[in-house]
Length: 406
Image (cartoon, rainbow, N blue to C red; front, side, top):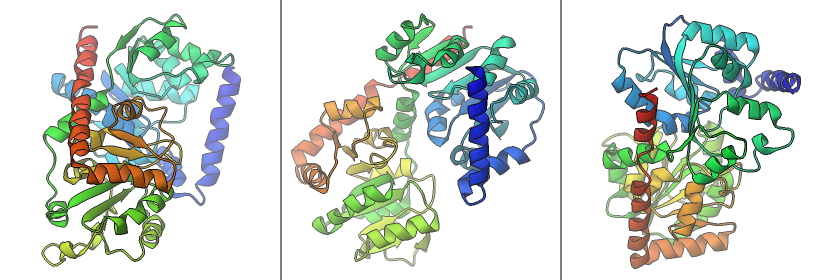
């Protein structure tokens, strides 16, 4: 099985390298790894994140360890450019790298260089050679905010190598009891149900939101529909609502902000009074005349929700929905597409009747009418959803208390 795994890693690298000739993200993936120089460290703390979302998920633990052990060097690695390119200069780390491709030689060289005292992986990332090298060097390995499902490779007849990876983990901090039971079925009992650290992150953000004066000016006295992390299928569904609710304002923060993507969104919104964030000139742009604002930069979304009354979360017509909790922490009822079942918090919000999964324009129109016109329902849902987020905080404290005692 290890031979098949190694061949799979090699094929993945070849595919990405070929794609890098015409794909910007693939080019960053290759170039970033080829151009980086790994410095020597002594007794570091190593955090690995797949991408930006996992960074934000694990950030509360990262921040707490930074405060508790200020003398320790912290190393961060990312698998994806969307994490590395945005957080490569974070002050929370002493060095930020792309994770070198998972080969035995790379793992040995990298771990020898950063000399970790402990390693913390967030949610999903499992790499055989890195796990094996940590295990060989007796370095404690923690997986935080992890969640397991029966359909994952670990629980398949052909998943022996992946099950072996799990045995190399010192301790799992899982989101729910189902994950604990699935691990128990593999005789893995080094497990704590800690919950999801994202709740701590989004709750802290909602308690101390970053003010955005331009957004406040755009909002004025109007109610705001925030469409976060959207893709074209989401945007085409939402567009008709703009004319149906002329007294509302709409903010689109698309998941991808390349020129072609923004141009496509503008074409979808043709006929609406639209302005892009990059077009706003302080003191010179009369924002009250526009009904739609397109956020064509990265990093504002988590703060945008404080100005909204309802949120649409994108991705549900693709691989899966994006982060619903950032909006939920501000008490916004949420709407999203059909692919949400893998996300426990989305299932919970649907059960609370504060989240709506939609497939068609008619279903979106129905959900929007309830949220945007029924004042009593909105107050009920807003209170329910905020309380849900608050009740699920505390994962960071459970993880830190365990790590600091071993």
